[in-house]
Image (tube, rainbow, N blue to C red; front, side):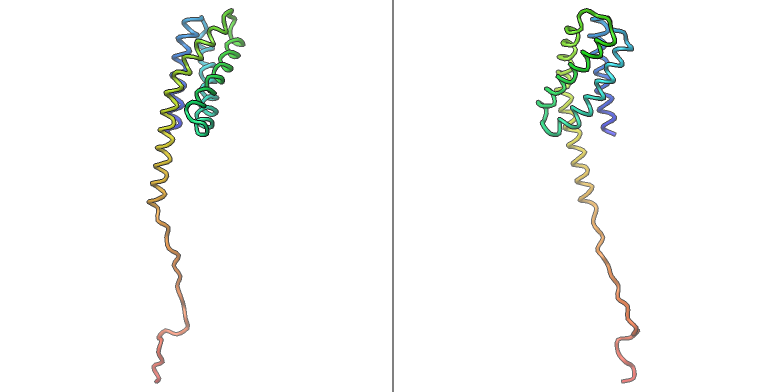
Length: 147
């Protein structure tokens, strides 16, 4: 459930940032801003937050998100719009998103660490059942009654 909340937060903040910068500042339509935000959020969350953040930490994930957001925003803005200043729009958007990403990675790391700790606690509380065996014999009484 935490992945859904984190992804939704990333998408909404990306949509707001790109809506302000690309939509209001560079006259990109809301549909194009929505599509760019959705693509960026999906790719960035899977690659940057789930894969790279685990292996390199916050700094490495922030740098990779900068490169990833620049590539996604530049190519999608260039393909979807007819604008003269695509590079400037992309650079401003990428810098703004990277600042957000730095703080977002801290939240993701805390959330993933909390999930790991909860899993460890659950595993400690589960006690394995001992292997019980029974023995059977033909005698019902251990001593002969005839003697």
